[in-house]
Length: 77
Image 1 (cartoon, one colour):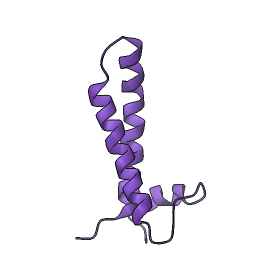
Image 2 (tube, rainbow, N blue to C red):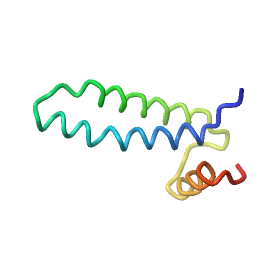
Image 3 (tube, rainbow, N blue to C red):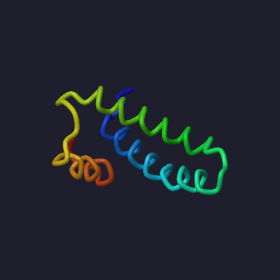
Image 4 (cartoon, helix red, strand yellow):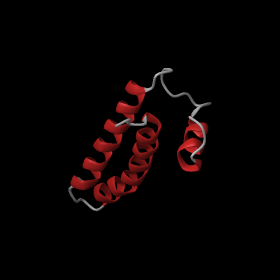
């Protein structure tokens, strides 16, 4: 089974963005941010995996929009 690092990067970015408001909400209301922290850690692990598995090196600011287009559009990798 071939794991696409671009997919892991996009999913990690998505989960990281979703966890940020939950983290802020938990901290401002004085609650434990258990699930938000778990989601943030999973997001970081997915991004770290993607960066370590990328054959042509790491992601740059110029290549990230193309990564999202390839993943969502199904374009050539």
